[in-house]
Length: 406
Image (cartoon, rainbow, N blue to C red; front, side, top):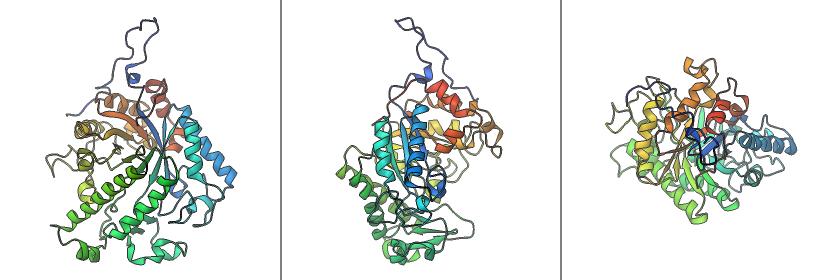
């Protein structure tokens, strides 16, 4: 699809009068009976919650409830709550330590159960609660001695790969893959989660001049593959397939969704790819996101289309129809990840200074029936909304409540 003007896919402002004589909802609301309206609630580095480590249990709980109420007030229906940000836990886990974002000290109990509370309070408000797990990131630093002494990464140093100033579990080790799933499944067994959610971090993003050192694992397990890249992709495929199967075996109604980087491959690399010139998840982080959708391995996918309409390297107006075509005929529901955090940020391109940019995204996406909703990054930005971009989305597209797909 060629470059599009911001309003190229805008729908008519009003439909005909209904039989009662009242004006019908705007066309953008016609799908409102059932659509994803979500926000990510990020905890890594205390991005969105809690506001700082070391708050009392009562203060943390109050802030969490306030975030859920914020979602309701914006007529959202889903909160994607980050509960395993760095190989730790926001619930009492027998596998991993309490997260330091709560108390400031990894392994120290906060005196309450954030995930359990979030599930109960979200459901009481009619919200879905999707528990967001980061599979392989251990720490945002590269010093294992900073981890609590009981941390699995310290007990199993052979699982750990330092890279780019961070620590990661090695996805090429079957015992790592099993452990990560066990840690996730503990939450699935304990709580009636509406979904298990992964973000875009599989193998780490490239760092210039550095190599992810998994040579020993490749020598042991990679013999059947044509290249290390193919072996790495198979490792991530196994994680996705096995996690999906284990979730369904325990809670058949719990969904499994992934929010990948928004570009699978560029068309210059692969004719099936998008008309983009960007990092490629297939090649650079070894995540074959197109395959997962086409094969129906996921209940939903939320590609992070964090770019403005008309951006030459990765145009939102190019990527929405590309993903819609990928999802067409698949059992995997397609939602779009939206970069609310860019709206009004003075360091971002001019398009993001216009409060109409975000609502134009929803108007464009509405022309593609495969798009079943949107998820906004992230909760703090839903609240701050410096130029009113989110308020405009709510006013123009979310006039009435909607149920999230199941």
